[in-house]
Amino acid sequence: MTRRDAAPGESPETAFPVAALTQMAKEVIEGAFPPLWIRGEVAGFKSHGNGHWYFTLKDATASVSCVVWSRDTLRIPAPPDEGMQVMAQGQLSVYPARGQMQFMVRALEAEGEGLWRKAFEATRARLEKDGLLDPARKRPIPRFPRRVAVVTSADGAALHDILSVIARRNPSVDVIVVPAAVQGETAPASLIAALDRVARWGAADVVIVGRGGGSREDLWAFNDEGVARAIAACPVPTISAVGHEVDVTIADLVADLRAATPSAAAEAAVPVLEELVEWLASLRQAMRTGVQRRVVQARRDLKRWAGDLSLRAARSVERRRSRVQELAGRIDALSPLNTLARGYAVARDAQGHALGSAAAFQVGQAFALVLRDGQVDASVTAVRPGAPPSAGGAVR
Image (cartoon, rainbow, N blue to C red; front, side):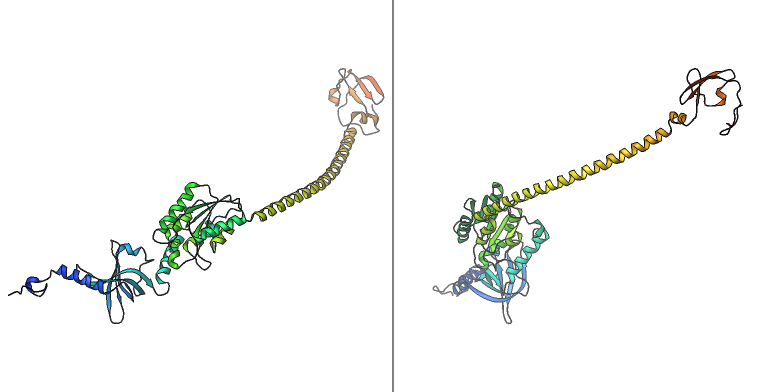
């Protein structure tokens, strides 16, 4: 018979439902164990389709089931590898549906830089595969920018440093601040949105993106793949200035120029106005000197060319004169008048045509014999074809 004052669970009539028992166990365990860090080796890691991670943490003598809910995986740089020694921060609890004790992990760190380095190298490999780390794609930073866009926290020390350096170096340069979160879960999306605003604006000559120093976790937004791709896609030349000189992020690798600090980025983006004025003055003097030297050299060249041209013209005229004289001598040698002057005569008929062969004559034909000093009218008494008589021979 059941006692009226029996406590819940002391009798069959007051037995707990299983769900109530496991829920009670969950509340008791969570109340007894505050959030804490535990250490162990990862075994049986599985990534579920809903985004949750499941694995076991074990040491030489014990093990505990672990779960990382999908909302918490966003704060962990990369999934752990099998056999990796890790430190997990979370809450010991009970999974009521199975009555199974489990450790709900909210943060996970590997010894050394294990998870962070794994995430860094994986992102770097994907970007390198797409050619975004190729030095050949990096653009030069404009030497004389008129407008500098700065993507950083509106109330951070980095912005103060950048504004101070630019104001000191060249106060005529316009600085446009595009505020963005630079750490925390919202930072990647905020940085991407700020870079998109710079791109859509389109009036900046160079953009500085970055923040001051901080821990590895504080700087991790600049290792985000989405941020890196937004920097690479920006149509404006980019300078990455994240943390201190020893800090190297994915953003540094993708940007057109990496500056060790925000102040160094401002120095790289904006030249000193006084140095620029001095440079322009020296350039103007160098141009004036160069033009003067060119004029002097051109005059010398013109004088030399004029002398060469005059000499060549004289030589050409002399060659042509000699050629004309040579041709005149040849023509004179072939002149009929010159032939007559040597004692020869030319026979012509009544129409003045030259009679150059015996066949052109007929007995009784009248013709004129042209000599060097006159003309003799004659007639043909006989025609004797054949070889001409030898020089000095008698004519019959």
